[in-house]
Length: 514
Image 1 (spheres, rainbow, N blue to C red):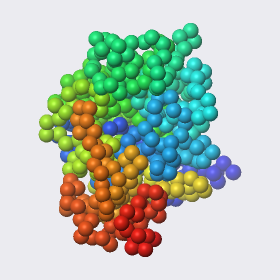
Image 2 (image 1 turned 45 degrees about the vertical axis):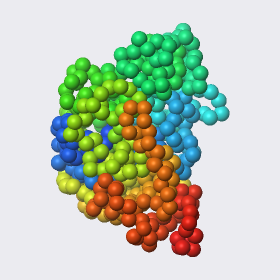
Image 3 (image 1 turned 135 degrees about the horizontal axis):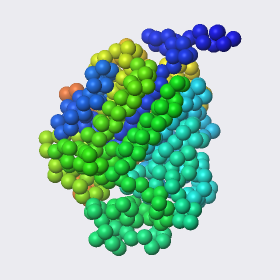
Image 4 (image 1 turned 135 degrees about the vertical axis):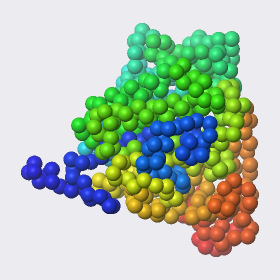
């Protein structure tokens, strides 16, 4: 029996593995890192040597997309293989929001766990904690959360570094919590008598806008209000080291068995408070220094894998949750110091927007000896990881799960330049679509962060916006009036996915072919 199990084969596209050869998988998921931020994607402000090395020896994708232009929706889609707009709760969450992933349906970490993988989360969560039916008590076991989603081990912050509670949570418990100093969190009203950015601006080491002027922690005001947990509060400047240490510990503890690690550093989300080792290491200010720190962390992970003798049997995927943003609530000089560096590469827009820069991501896949080195034009979405991992293991995606995930394993392995047929892009519940070189934005709103304290909202009127990306990467020349049949084709796809996202306007259903 033992011999037959060991000799059983897992056959995917272009490879055949024994059960004992299941590859480890590490997803390194950056935050607010744009298409043009790595030097291998044309970035000029930071030398990302470690990331570039993985790209040269693996597949570097030119048409890879996050599912959304903001953090919670894209992370939801990555975990579930489902477009976030299908879940009305999958929007940017406060730090005290309930869990938005349905634990009764199989999601990616639960699937990998059930297939014999040790599963770990280290870094940013931001998918909610606890039940919607009752207020979350931070001072006892916090559940449901990552464990109920499928992670055997978790070390994370609840939301973002600029949102309370500013503590780490490990396996459902706040780290270093003193029971005599319980944590309270509120996003509507102040709790306790902690200083805030409004009441005590002289205590701040970084000026912030009004939204980010809640409770001051570590000299930085946050979104929301918190009191208690003083011994548990994190230090922003040591966050990267803390997460990296936990990621390396997870690798070490699971080096003898297949594992999947979702490693989601804070870099380079605001507030960008950099460890002194990296402060001033680039010309771009804190944002560039955070990118350099992110690259160093990638290098340390690779070093650890090599030291443990498991590098060659580990798939490393590097990407980001949404496009870049320079100013996002804190005055730190990112706009003033950007110079010639184009964080969104050749694309228009960034975080929050339906322009290409909002969701077109750097995406690198490394697996020595298995992934063919090269540059790929395959069209892929981060929602596709679920179905692709299932195919890698010779398994089917469970029924009623990952309905928007497409098996693009041949593209990930570098065996095919064919990915999915089209990709849906979401920004603040508004949709766009890319198919081939055509990009269509239906009527609705496009929101852009233009700078300090300024959002611009552009209303897209009928019949929408149509661009040919290879000829017009900056999305300036609207061709909708010249190619009505292409508008109908792309609009129908959106309608078939979600009719509420494809308003009829002056077109009738018959005219659109519905």
